[in-house]
Length: 445
Ligand code: PMP
Image (cartoon, rainbow, N blue to C red; front, side):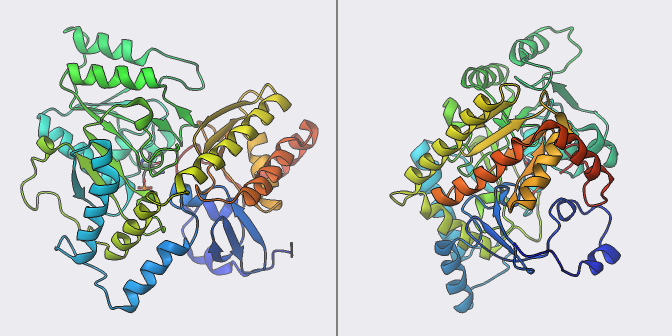
């Protein structure tokens, strides 16, 4: 690797202090392909972070990119409000044929603003409008976005305080698992819903991530999700499964709720939906919940035609022979690595599902060690992000399409970073804490 000599002065002088990832990964990036990111100084990084779950098919996926360039070369419409367009027709048709019908889902599709938080806002709004109730139940460790409604159902205190959001209308219940250990969330909710003196009104909806990502990689078990579905159904409460980060194949199937065989009422989808890093969000909702009047929930950027084109191409990948086999093989490689980490250091907890791994150092060095592991990975040419309450969990989310050799190379860097002796780790973490380039986020991403 060459040394990092690049000009970052304009970022420091002009860009708001709120910038985050550039502090953790100090390079100036210029090009990317597949699982590799190139910096302008010649360094090449393997990317196990994938734009926070936005690049499940890798950077500049060849199949998807070819569709995009052909569309642009043809003078295809780029911006389209919510007009009928050819690109949107193709996307909706593909979504129905590849995603919805084969899973027996008859959900309708609402286009909303282009970010994940826009989809969560729309989901909460429709749940309240359709039920005529205002309360929402969310879970500890949840992350649903940074705008006010989404923030209100996000657990992190620091993020909530930054947004000036109180706990009105939202009741938090411990998730099935977390740093404090397991909890019978469904038993608790059952009691609160049925006791007319519980102090909790029956809510409009329960919002849940079937696999908590930012909260520290906590996968909900199949029985837990089934009980939640059964409970909500029995009480006429809508179930919103936030698939924004855990969806689009991250857990091995397209949706992360599929493992449990449950059907949510409302599903916000975003991040990897466009398949190419272009902003695109939708809300899937059961037909009877589609009680919107025309124009009641609008947005200028609901018609990102380029994202429709790339999303259509991304869905085609799911129909290709070999795509799902490749995903299963890569996931198996990741799980073998998880077993290796566990046996090398039993104090480390590793949680996994599909192409997602959370290496929890909470009881094995804590956030300081996690920070050091991240820095050592970066120095070794690997990008990994941290998650969890205190950033104590190393989050490993490689592209679903990664080739075995690149996966192995990245995992070797990670294993070496984890195996650094604790003494060195402590010294290094101290040095890092003093560096302005490294900041703790406490899940405010
Ligand atoms: N929900 C989940 C589960 C997320 O992980 C995120 C983003 N990390 C969001 C919602 C918000 O998405 P966005 O940052 O695009 O607003």
